[in-house]
Image (cartoon, rainbow, N blue to C red; front, side, top):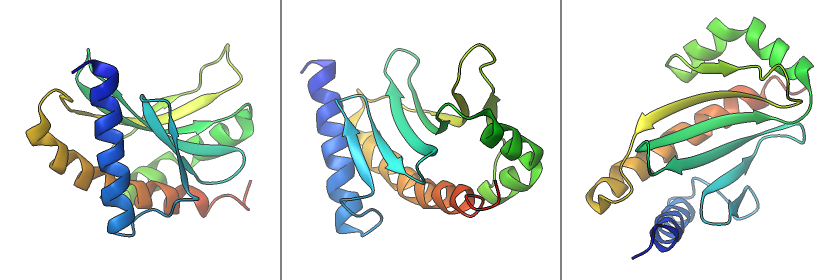
Length: 141
């Protein structure tokens, strides 16, 4: 099975389980080709979840589109946000880019299908947490 087919199978499995467990509704996410999913938070920032098969990591990113004031606001609340998420996050301002990211990566080997259930359960716990934490600041910025 090609990597592209494997990724498609993983994300299809994730979406099916997420919908069955009612952790996501069909209007909250969109599949980005076979590389990841995008989960809505608000119009200026969203979650992007992806897998890097070479580095063997699964990453949850709060992707901030073209607006540094959001990143700066979140960075000023870094300790509060990390406390609510329950872990340290990686903060990337991307100085020479309009966009910025706040992210967390965990080890994950997509080629080991026995790990899929644990990774999907992890995402189903983390996605609502990230969405809720970052959504609540939407009107403060």
